[in-house]
Length: 134
Ligand SMILES: [Zn+2]
Image 1 (tube, helix red, strand yellow):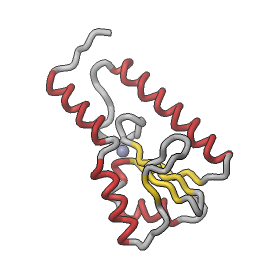
Image 2: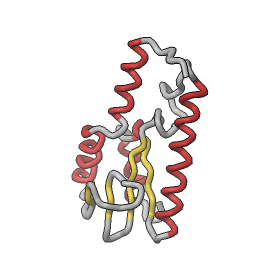
Image 3: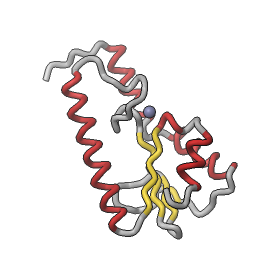
Image 4: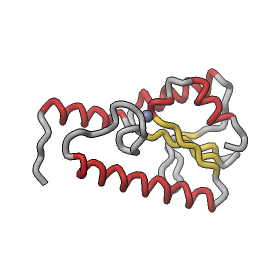
């Protein structure tokens, strides 16, 4: 597979890779939990699919999905070059996400997936995280 990325494109992609699982994403959500008196969450909880946060008592698994890697249909996430290559990787991630969600649900877990770009949207977060039927 020929690498047709420029240096700038590549470093932009690497930044997106990092930001898909970076600390500030988690800290954002922790702050949100605190602001909304949401308790009972755990980080680094050993559960299938490695959720970012787990509420063991209520059996909720929270994933924060990076828009690029998990194929969110929002701006700035569509690769222009090497489209097929990225599309393949992204569709593999999406497939895995679905399998993880399915497995957890069949074990009685509630799965909440939050897009990276929704982290700044307090109302969207509140709907997702406090809606009991979520
Ligand atoms: Zn997004």
